[in-house]
Image (cartoon, rainbow, N blue to C red; front, side, top):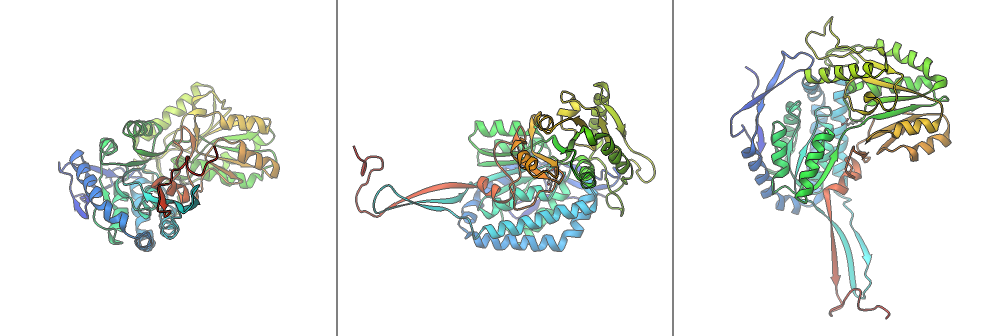
Length: 496
Ligand code: UN1
């Protein structure tokens, strides 16, 4: 019998009202059943939102540093449970244990960071234009929020939203990806055990329709989402219609530029990690390599050799570099793009197929794949593949490299390898992306820095660090008049 998991609403673990469930299995071995999870419906969402609404006034009133104490306990518990959680995460979503440990560590860093911010939720005081009057701008929570996240960073990315939101005094309903419900449950247990008050944080498992109902619920004030641009656009449209605050973190087609003066050994390590780490299933994955023609051929050979040596397998096993894709549909999608790449005339120089063989069983493994001769108008140059596929371009100048780098609807991360300080500073300004790495790959976000993208990747908000607090707070402007008389701004004290 598979383990049976429940939702967490108002401090109580409870099944879906319908008592329906869905199954989560391991992508490395689809016959390994992780558990049965509640296939929630509108009734469950309604209960969770009601609980969050009821808990909001008390949580808002709780002094922020008291909220911070709970966040610190969350960080402590995550630290204690890091290894066990990492193994459970790898089992459910596939990336290597080293990576899932990093994922939990990102959550730990975010917990302590958010806790420290609870003593620094600075407002401002500003001189009034009138005498005996004081102006202030104080920060208040937004209210009751929905959080919907993807499965690829099943603990870190939810916490980028949840921890700052809680620190700032918001109450939440969390719907994790239906591909990683166990990870969502484990995170919720940590919050419960750390003493987050009943109703302040609620977990509702299920598929996209749960998210849609949450988004459209009239008692929801804000939505924070990480996932595909298609789903994000729908959430954004619904929030726009209902005047809800909305933060969207979506796709990427992240370029790494390697100039002729780059340290190629360093760039090699970077491109392997950027393109094939997490099996390419990151919104920050290095999916385009834009290489100067002087080093292109030699560098591509180096990448091919090194990528051939990457060990595919169950992420729970020692020595494995690349885990499986998340599900059969992901294999189909990557295969589709490999076919389109070939039809459109790119050269498949490595991989391109589902991997099977020794120790791989029925897992959704895919060979590290490289295309050269990619042109900007090709599909594999433009669309997010979310798999271990690297599209390589050859360019003759920095200007051409930047033009290609920017020629996409997305704008999440970007990178340049060069030893030239002038060129690297130009790239920081020229690359149209929310994040630019110099001499590092397109992945490697730190918890206290804003994270997010421009163009179709986002809608102007940031996760992570102080960027997240800008989303999770509202400005309250306060005027205190101690003159004892009616003073009229714009009319008193103004020369004719
Ligand atoms: C994502 O792919 O959704 O910097 C986030 C990074 C990771 C986060 C990726 N820490 O790439």
